[in-house]
Length: 557
Image (tube, rainbow, N blue to C red; front, side):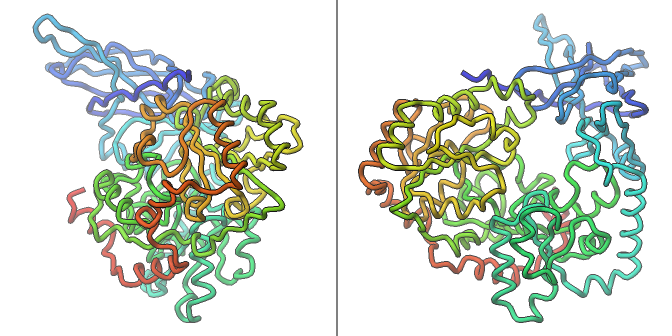
């Protein structure tokens, strides 16, 4: 069984007085009222790690009246850190209450508005000898968070910071001119992909809208990315990611439209800057989604009160809207039932002469930043590797003349070759080698754990097998909105033996979907008329959204 990820500690608010980062030396100064407890220790702790990974600060303290002033110092540049977010965590001894004393860990919070503004106006970072970058990551929660990642010479420099300020200057000097353009910017993950709902919505706009309507609609992508070919024919309406022109257009955009969070419109995990804060705070995002919200909880990421707040939330059905309203706490008018844009071109292209099974597991929160060693030790890797190596599986594929395609989630794409088994009927598909939509349409059946692509296959009336072998850990760490036992629209199996039996059943009946699952389709997926993009466009046009700042003030967020 996968060892469970460390629980996130609660937060303790302190009064911040100092934060500096020079040549890898992190210095934090803060004070805490005695009545709130005593900080016994301070550590830099890796977030979402499977096992606790922490480094202690050298902590000193000095009493001053009813408060204690603390100063923590750590030479992070000399540590062997994992690429991840790192929280500053205090070990707190609470004030005496009777005879019970419970020491607890808490994330250090309370990054003052003044200090936060200082870090934004004058961002700072340090480069380690091994080519990594360490910098404070300012977020809406006002917590002390440190980011550690590889250095990118294109963007991690003061020269690029100057480019940001120049783009802001050029925009605000001619703000009325730029704003009149009513620019819509469309993108997918990291502004490097064109495979998902954003691509199909963009294509609809280019093909169906009159010239006057589409002239200010642009797809954002790094033109060096392989997926650029998917939008190249509309190059007049394709804009180079992070070009100077793009940076001005991002300032001016009326709407950002994406399958992903607003951060994907900019350099991923870039250091703090005025430019980044301004665009994220001002711009309304139309969220096209990756897939139906069901088997993976995401409300902590996309909650209405959070930094990834969206203006319109695209959903596929009334049951899904109920989930968004209940867990994400959006108003009903913010949730639009349109169906997903990519379903407009979704059709069953399975060829009886070339039987295909697609195996597509999703990612795991607790493995996102795991080292190679930890990933290869994980249940995730061990279970799927054992399944692909199973001689019984190989015999099944041979008996029924089936090819099995194994397609790993983009977050784990670097490990695809680790699953190689040498069986000619099992093909590993590296991320980006083939469009996902193509794989979903050509397969006869899908095997997954919790991935939302299950809905795309269900849409095509094909069988789905769910293999949630780590359901207990997943429920504790990630969570689901649907009950896997009661709500899944396919067979649910927990062992490799049961999985092989389910494959044998469907291979033997020509991959026909069971009637009990088919009967629920009209409720779960009512919109299957290939007009989803049109509905999305019409909803955006009639939205008349107020500024994001005004909307937050209205909602008291």
